[in-house]
Image (cartoon, rainbow, N blue to C red):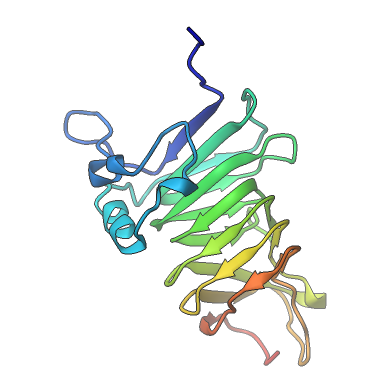
Length: 212
């Protein structure tokens, strides 16, 4: 008999425990294959979104990880359910697949192979930063890219090695952290193998700023 394959683990961030002190994933448990591929378990998007919405979250969750992690073969998946998770790993330890749920925020300078954004992504850890995606990036309707732009055309970046899929109802929330001059151009997303969709909704520009 071959031993069980525990080569991929799933880390869960920002989930509230049930009254009995245990994790209760509710309807989401019907979708999740923990330790397997998260991206293959979505099924119908509306049903999946409803299941995610029933997971109890901790809105005050705030966790920062500044290191590489240990893993065998495929490594780690990650589920971010609530609050803010700041990840500063390196190219030496990639998360295989990551889901950012609607009430969660991913911050830091993370390295992720496949990223599905239903909540908020905010690159950097107190400053302008980069989220590195080695595979596909998918930003669904209502999900927010919290973007910092600064002087000399500096900005946050989501750098995708494969394809990026941006829903027409995906959102960008812009915060200025330096002088923004007329005519400045910012590169906020790159996708080496193509981009499907575009950002059509800008929900905020912080002050002070100038048109760009």
